[in-house]
Length: 507
Image (tube, rainbow, N blue to C red; front, side):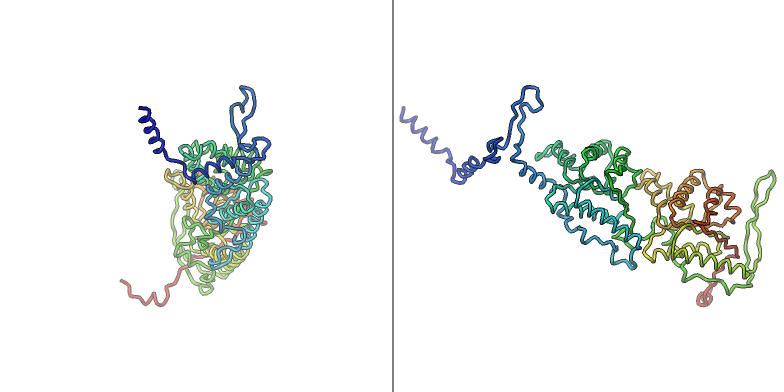
């Protein structure tokens, strides 16, 4: 019986797999190589420490990494942040290849003002990457170079071994959400990695889904870094007024934040120098209104032109009644001289846009042609211009109130108010617009007046009617240091058909 038991035990023992030489070496290596520094006087090589503190102390019962593992911990944190950043795909974006001269494919170089602006933005970002002090807020429209400069900062800093997180704000929020169910980390650890990164670059701020949870997490991250003055870069195509008030307040701290606004063309679409959704400059007939196609009308001297004028009179009950009357008017030398003065002023304004240019006169007198010619000339020089019918402009602003609008009113209003060159065609009498419309027009023009932004206004109203309908605006127009007013009071221009067109048989 005893022998039978021994045979059974021997068989069971032989069935148990013996450790291989590889496993044995791994186990031996694990025993030989401790987690920490073998010579560490604190942990003795264990790599962890437990504090001898009384019950109730915040560190009672907790195990923490020893100081001897700080280097390893920093390397792991740096690798983790780099993996989150996706900087591997952006490593080609450096200060060296940032083009301050604009896209080489564009027909005309960007203006000197835009070039100086890009040079300034680049120098500010380079200086920041070298010292990592404070914050930088890069603001500008799509394709102006914000992300390139932000990535260049991150790449320069990473090259020095500084743990850096470069991430778009939507991706940042997604990484926090995914951490709730991640087997590799916890939400707390991920959140701590983000807010404590030696350098945090948040790209495309404002494109995130602004839920209550998202706003709160963003505020917590920004507020933590603001309080601790941790180096941070934020890029956005929003204006500050569109940013949540608590975050906006911190971004407006001039002692900590360097606010750089980049004002240049979209690098990807450099030919789109005006707002295609609003500007008339892209319309077929308007495209033909240039200084080259301008006619001085000298050949019309003495010609009699039939015109239709609207005459206002008081009807029964005191109501205003407008009658249309047919008149015949000859083109005089005085007419042609007024037209030439307006043309010369427009040409000079196109060459050196400054202040305001106001062109008044009846329909088809040439004011819209001159206004469009100014816009085309500036665009041909690489500048930007918006030419809009006043009524269309107001409708364009109202579109932002639609539920499906993908742009805010503040954003659109800001783009118009700060346009490098704004041409307002067809300024009408005040009773033609609502109180809201009048208020918005006043806000736009009041801002441009005090910021000395080049502006062109055309209207069919004569000076007296303009002053009566828009007294506050007229007072600004009368400022000779900022505004020029030209009245083109002459018969309408009648375009003559070419010989080829006249030869075509009528249907």
